[in-house]
Amino acid sequence: MCEARHDLPLTHSDPLTVVSDRLPVLDELLAALRRRGAPEREIQHFRRHALTLPVEAALPCPLCYVNNRNGVLSVIADEAGFERVRCGRCGEHLNVRKNS
Image 1: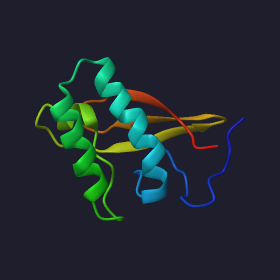
Image 2 (image 1 turned 30 degrees about the vertical axis):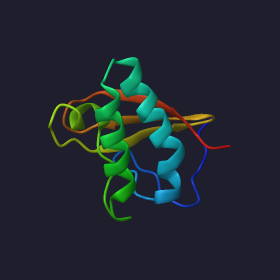
Image 3 (image 1 turned 60 degrees about the vertical axis):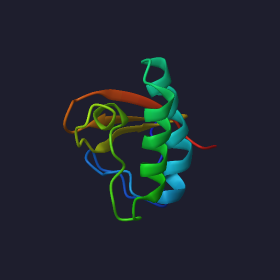
Image 4 (image 1 turned 180 degrees about the vertical axis):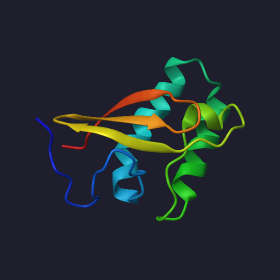
């Protein structure tokens, strides 16, 4: 069953833009980079970059970022316990756990 998000209207193309939403999502994205064998230096660089973005900026795709590309993540499904996000550039899909 899909849940409504009270702090960010959900459509199939909404970028992740609210900083409080980014923190649990960011942990998941960093873990995805580690699973794919990205160097720790690149992972930490992505983390710093994502945390310093202005609130209105969309969260970048970590996989594009470590490959010197500019991709943006959008929520494509909001289900109980997780969100499915997709990069508009590379097309990668990632499941991220929601903050309870």
